[in-house]
Image 1 (cartoon, rainbow, N blue to C red):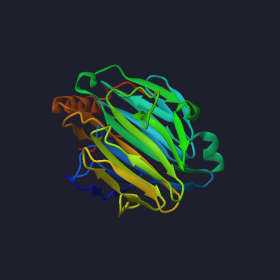
Image 2: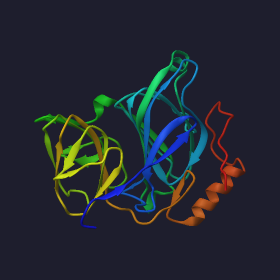
Image 3: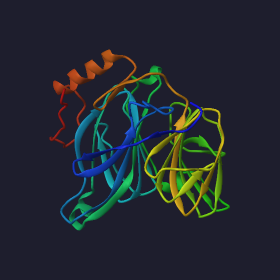
Length: 286
């Protein structure tokens, strides 16, 4: 691939929350370790309502939630109960099996709120697919940042732009939030072999070509680009080193199809770690 590849996201609805999902797609199954990428679109929830994703399982991946607006409550089968606000990273590694819920906190459910953010799934290296599950929360002020010449960078996870995030990724990863003032330029080097650019808002050029808004632009390996903002622009850059083919079914990711089948059976039999105090669960449809 010598030119950028555009992946048009599909519109989904998750319990009333609108989502744009460019990964995975038939054109591109992954970018570096990223096998799943959701843009949770801006939504205002009236008093008495909110996002509510009931108890569901994962294997073989890490989930990363990063919000621009709003707040979510993360609870999992390890006993974690963590509020996640704008600019913080919620990092959950499923390993051999974990269950969790994600919902609008009770206080915001009562008063009403807005929600806007991203959730990504990163595949685990094959040697770690059956590791012990874990969770970590990284406040906004713990993430490294740079601000120069009209370009603000927050390194959400991994390494890039001479920054290193404290999020405990398990393979070479790049995940950065970029904010460019009108007229600002940023060099996108080829430090990581696979990269993709997602324009959330604004208008920007990649070299001399327009960057489509809310489409995933997969960049060719080994090429450097100049990102230029025609107006104030908000983007994310993601990628890293590929981990090899992965099978994905429902919430399960694995290199071995047998692990998927085992996980499906365990969840169907209710043979799975439970989130304390949770009774409602999402059933798999096969």
